[in-house]
Image (cartoon, rainbow, N blue to C red):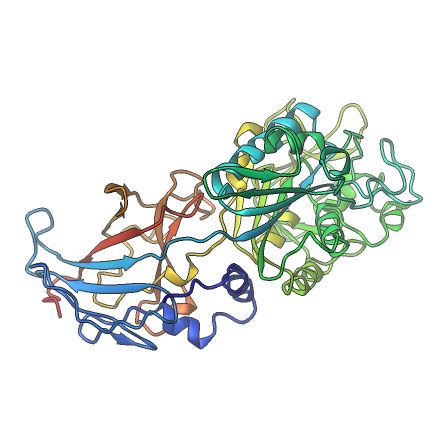
Length: 498
């Protein structure tokens, strides 16, 4: 009997790759092997041929719950690609099981109410679409933690104190929502109406404080979560709905104190201290920068590395498998002078006269340590794109064998482009679907559409192969049960099918 690995262990491996890479065992499980050897690590893979002969028996399924066969078909070429031979990689994907997932939605109170409501509605709908089969715990917190003793218009001392905000919206008085799919299609929930309605009920009041601390709010809320929010070996997803970048500070009053060198106390001070733009702190005057990055140890702001440590400390309870950001774009970086206040501010990345949408540089820098997704707050109805399913496919993301043509066909474009055809078969229903290659943004991130899509990337998990290429399918949700993938890639010229 093949035992499905727990979500927590799979997602935890993804998080630990930040500092450790995959363990040797993971590398062994991910390796497919060479065409001419087909033996790697703990899994013995089978060779077949295009004439339909059954693969060799004896595949060991105990480690990854994935039976894979590398099939070398006729390598004499074909009519469509006479200069290349073809190889086929077949993956048998285990049926998904219900997993326990915790979701935290962190909402920027400086966003206009309509934008916040539309974004949260989109997230609620996508959560049901993507995680509707899972056992969910979901909470909402505000990114407003106050400014202490500092005097700043629209802000008070403590904000919403990183509290779960759902108490008044649940049937049982708990501060978070529960939703679990049951056999037969019914749903057990502790709220009335749709999940999107429940999230809207828990939205914080739009107080308009310009100092938002989403990273600290999320981390503090999770550290102080009710004892029954987390389940052991569950998955954790943090979703940020943001208009401003992170300004988390241990002492906001000190950060916003009088400092003639930094100009007026306000949100731009967070950028002055927390960012380097074209190699220097952004100036409080009109300017356009090519790029900005987060300062590792900023004066007055909380170092981003401290959040990595605190998130990893949550691992025994909920492994962090996704960070989603519905916020401003990371380009352009334009500083302007607000005609109403006379203070410097980043221009909205949604365009002039649009709602605030600062480049979320600190947020994106923190998210890079984990699997992450971004969507623009300029189109709040598309914010649901930041929802991701737990990466239960990690153990089924194999290393491509050295027998394929691994050269990038478009080296000057983002992503690695290979000559491959990928198809998915739902064997229970008899449905076939061609899966397109993923597309990429100019910054090299995977576009939120289409889904599903496939991509290839270099990975230390594939150090057992020469080209170190790992194959991944990006999805909004786990596939149907009894799903099989067929991956057909070109062989190098003259390979001969060995």
